[in-house]
Image (tube, rainbow, N blue to C red; front, side, top):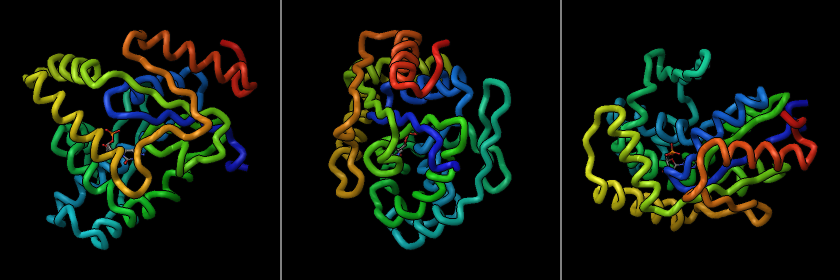
Length: 229
Ligand code: C5P
């Protein structure tokens, strides 16, 4: 039964490394991957495309519930199709990230995306990346991780990522955006960003990506959820 498939939840603020770490752990274990942030980003992008105001909760919930999205995993790359068109790059912009965090504050939107997220739970297991994976969506997950890093370090990582992509952005404005998004995610009334009471918090400020992946694999092995690799 899919409901009994193990889930590793990885929650935390933007830029803590959740996306990369989740992808690597899922690939190492051969588990499925849920990038829940992508669903909020896709809802925001679809809203902008269809000229739906970002505070029209019923219309946004309808968009979320009927989102025509296909995730295509090929080798190392993942492509996202929205209404049949490649939206992989479009959902990664700062504007869409900001719009996503606004629509994500609306309870009806979160409710509309709940079952779609739970449907990702399939054997042999799922790595679920987001803000409320351990607190709301998969409360019974056998291993919950809360990944953090200082805001300065997260801004530095984002700056580097953008520079590699040929985008020039100022470090101080990135830091401000990160702090504003953290505040919005932590202060919203529904599913605020916080560690689940049974989550293990891992601060990645001084850790490399392979160190974090190894630590998570160790924890899964210790709990009998994965065999030692
Ligand atoms: O993780 P990512 O930056 O792609 O998420 C975009 C936005 O979607 C976040 O800032 C957050 O507001 C929202 N989100 C959420 N719950 C999740 C995943 C993302 O509220 N599980």
